[in-house]
Length: 346
Image (cartoon, rainbow, N blue to C red; front, top):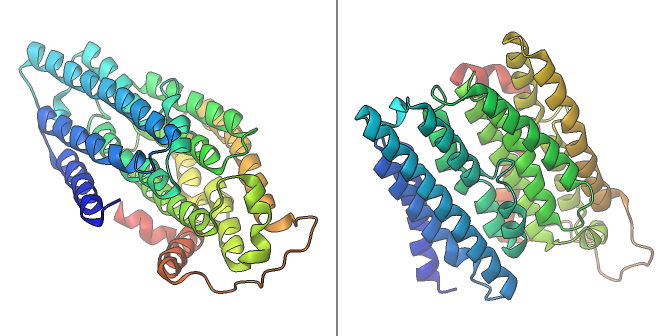
């Protein structure tokens, strides 16, 4: 793709995200979402492969439907209450429609079907954008309307997302699809606590974005699109495989690593709210995710191919990726000791 065109699309993505996050008016929020959708489409379909074109078409149709629902919901609310303010969403019908629209934008169950397919048709770098940056504007809308949305519905969607994300990821062999189901599962953790502690949802999202970026960039450096490719990675880039192992275990939420922090805080908050069954259910469902993260980690670091390879081990990573992978890997593994400081900032 032409560098100037790529620059325009990236600037448009930043512009759309900024407009949605900083807006108070529903029309401005909708405009930001539309700019975002139109800017990411060329990045998804840039390879001109039929699967990429199919992914871009699916993405466009789903996001257009969700945007229409956002507009319809806000207009219905404005018709009845005279309010266009995002925080003044009070009509029950509008709240229900808005929950469906934001769930569709994010990829929460039962509106998740598009996400694994779109991620599978995109490159790993575009997949990283779809899993992190493109989730920020709808997440901001979810947080701004969190007081208006139905807590029971959100908890139901959250537990379903954690369950489906875990179950569907178990038998996948494509790394992008595994990361897509991992994203759906993590969105479940974010949605379950939104009505009670929006700041905790935001913290969870930030940490999820950091760890996912580390995993995607490591996979991109290895050019690993399938589990079979990961199996030969240790002989080529041992350091990168070790980084990937730690980042995956952090994504699974194992205690000494950063990913444990949001899960611990969410379970603690749910217990404070007397929602012990929900806390137990979502904690048990995270074990499904742990299984396929361990499977990925096992393929990347412990499995050796049956034949000896002829290349030298590359202990140094390629130059451009070096700094970003190093910084993100450090953040995704070592933030737990400074969790008191993190908690004072939220």
